[in-house]
Length: 171
Image (tube, rainbow, N blue to C red; front, side):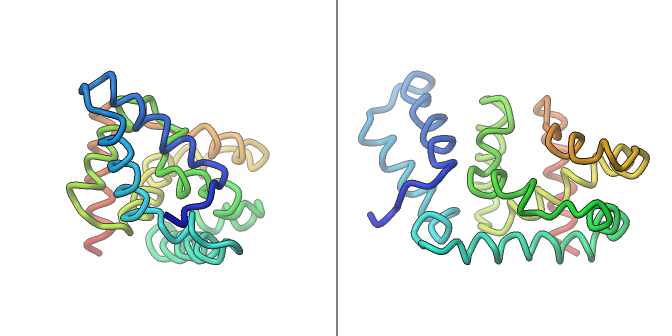
């Protein structure tokens, strides 16, 4: 289907394959899920050769941060930490390698429920927003480590981040 393997695709396929044992569906149904999911949310990233869509996505994250979290944007910019450094994997895997599997399934349910291929960008900003105090109050030498360790540890925390993402999307 013209989807080329790129780093991170395994973090979409892996959780989908685990659904075979979680909800007892066939491999052909899983293939259809993967195909539909990639086509809806990731098609531009996995079909192109030059990564222009990914570069554009990172630029969008920068713009959203400038608008919604200017202080976080400014400190990341001062530290020369760009979205390419922290958000690339989040975008390409829809947080597939970042969250525990049950939390990831809930996140993906939200993506499907809101039917918005842009929602992942609001989630990125919302996740950074929930940790902004930690980012802003840390020594700048620790900020890269803080950013790479950002995660969501519970379904209730995910709900908080999703609600914030919806508010960001509305604004």
